[in-house]
Picture 1 (cartoon, one colour):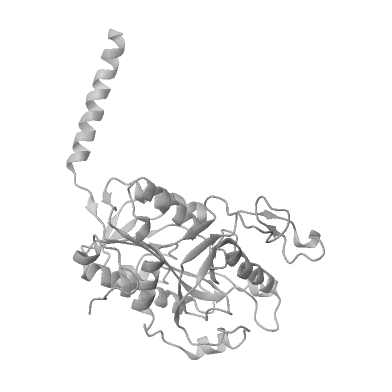
Picture 2 (picture 1 turned 90 degrees about the horizontal axis):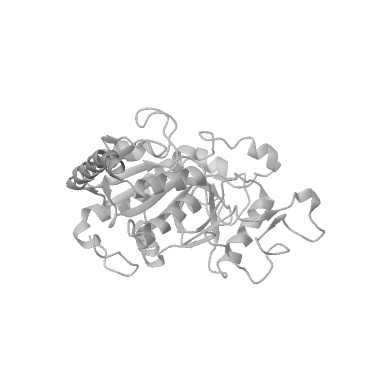
Length: 356
């Protein structure tokens, strides 16, 4: 026993000393976390990804190493921090969890804003439009049969876990399948941003004119619209029809499908766990997705041909959707930072007075 004590005593003194030193360093209070999912090259000065506008316009000049995440963090002196999660649910979940557990930051009062691009349903949104989600529904948790082998009468080979056929009632979401965001906060953000001017261009008009859908040919606008989040990049009219049923099926008819993206179920799962642990506040989470491309093919083209054209940087509204994400998201971020004395302790809700 004495030998063991002699062995562990130096280790004990070393670790307790390190813990005391770490405890003496006050964590950085973060007011807003801007969540982006990819950057093309450098953070500034080249072809932009989702992060670049935030770095350049909000002067996120402080670079913080983040070896346990996907990409170095960026921050400014106003308390705004930006993260690039990496694409797909696994990257996103791991990066957000790593940030939430990082002892350098106090995130207990932080607002979390996903500001990223997405595919859009032409029935609900147009190119370069912005959709604030009240609901995010996971699209990966399912059984699947190849469409060439599905029974006659089925509209899809996707079957909810625990069910025998597509959209079998009653719906029974699995843990982590449905995320209901703070509707009061979402409605507040939407009301704050709904009149944000989003420019239209001849290029956008020409691209929109090739598609069918109630919203397909509208100039860019800000709306409320819900999301299917799946790491599989799906595409085509039949998949869009599946998504239009998948969201209301799992939300008891409350959700309306508008956008499809790859990361948000992973992001939101981590934020729920972090909130349970007291390291984040679930009531302060917002998801803003902007439409870089439609989720289905245009007239005169099949789904495979259309999918072959869907590549980052080549989407029909790639740059306009990046601009929309910043324009709309920045309105909310600026409001929170400018009036932090109000929003630090009180989460804004729709109908509450907005500062001039």
